Length: 325
Length: 302
Image (cartoon, rainbow over all chains, first blue to last red):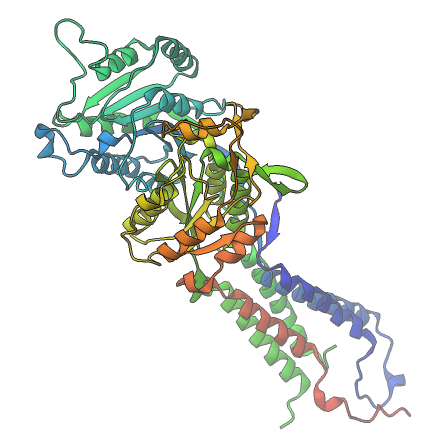
């Protein structure tokens, strides 16, 4: 609780100066024609001692203030509203391509750039939400832990400047994203926000494992699907397509089969992006219990204040005193 | 001319009180400070798992040593400096986040650092020049290009053909920074690690060659990896970076405080100590006996 520290502890070496008023106790001289004429005055002696202690305390307060004491960072359990969102960002090579013809008029740049813009907007509007960041291509990368510091998440999102490489190992990405929720203390809505331009095959064995994890951790999935020019639609009329030719269709089916909330947003659809951002924003209203980090608090101001009060007390004494200590 | 003692001491005390009031008005002055902006890129290829360091008496692998050095550097850089992290494997570099202020975000930077390990790699081969050049390009793409700190052992697999080295297209020294050689020049076997980080065997020569080149190995003995300083020094000359050999974790932070890579930033600096100190001196003076008294005759006693 009381986690005190000093920003400039070097000044504390001056603390012995506080003894100076006490040490010079006997060394004052005062001209007086006849000491014997002075009546004994115990009250004065007491007052004198009090003044010395006062000066001593004043010096101590000033030196402590100069050392700049602070109360360290503290964690406080808070209840608010918000969500825990792990952003799962596709960085496979196909993300370097431009958009489909239909969407190209609305979104300029590569799918990477669009993804960055979408995520930045989402985080800007995120309020209290916690965000984490995972990217995946051939393997999954732990980029940033869940944090409420949105500038940190933006530094992660905006670091994906260079061209993506490799394939879409969706299963590894999901596994890593789910591991963010292994810690039991996370409350509030839990979401994996998948931003990708394609699916990838998940073996039946892995599907079973993921299904079980989604079920026990209760993590919802939102998928912002950045469709390629020749990309597949998520829904297919008629008979199911070839298994290898349309991984997106099967990934969509897999997500639908999970017993957790799931939404897919095909960015090609006008307004899909706004709908995604609104829906995720709505999660803010779920109650959320979290640990808020209260930054270190400066206590030097209090010490200067104390010194000022002691100094003000001393001022009339100095004025009335015939000769100081 | 002679000010009575009580006037003098009251005046000094009054001035001291004024200083305290000024300190309470929170004087934070914009002062120029030296800060640094670095992006650390860690090699996470298999050879970095080679245990050829001794850290506090235990055999330590190169990647752990590199992480330790970066962690130590985080505490050595002054507040206001910024640090980004990324990794290199195969032939490319990935940033994990753009530089963040090192004091405010220390906990997050340290957390991400502990998560950097060989399991993040997406391929087993290692073409350092491609990764290094990609890293420099990446630095230059950001709005405020950080200096690069590239930590690697210089081991390439499969061995690169010198005639087919990629050409460096950038401007040497832009951005500046360091290539930090990690490891030992004594050839040491590279462990095969199981997903739980336990050693399940060692890389053979054949495996290392077949890894991506599909070459036929003549013999199949253990593949030995060593820090290739000559190669890294050559790359440093091409790119205008400085080469250093990491032997102790604390060295890195000292190298990074290089004045030529510092930028001066105006940082709002707490100047309350100045007024506090003045107040302290004034309080002491106000309590001191007046100087003119010191040479006086002792009091007459009748």
